[in-house]
Image 1: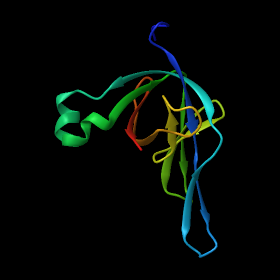
Image 2 (image 1 turned 90 degrees about the horizontal axis):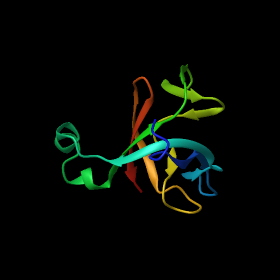
Image 3 (image 1 turned 135 degrees about the horizontal axis):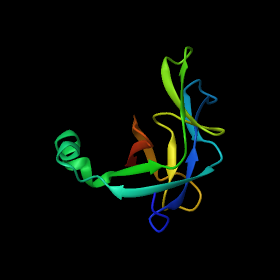
Length: 120
């Protein structure tokens, strides 16, 4: 990755708790720093896939080696980079100061992890 294009983003895992009335309440945990390159979605495939929503989509290429872990309980793939475990629907903070401003909608396991994130 080119050093001048890298920026620090923060990953916020999604936690689902039960509120007083018994309904699910989604919150994001404390953020953990990652280095990544961020650019807007603009390929023909992404335009065909997301349509008018493409303006709210960003691509994020995460720096670092990863491993894939299958969670039997949830039935999903978890991508682990060091101590950070990335999965879909977790939050990413790119521009905001405290809370995540994007949600992971897709993880593509290429040589580096490529995330597609959507504005919250």
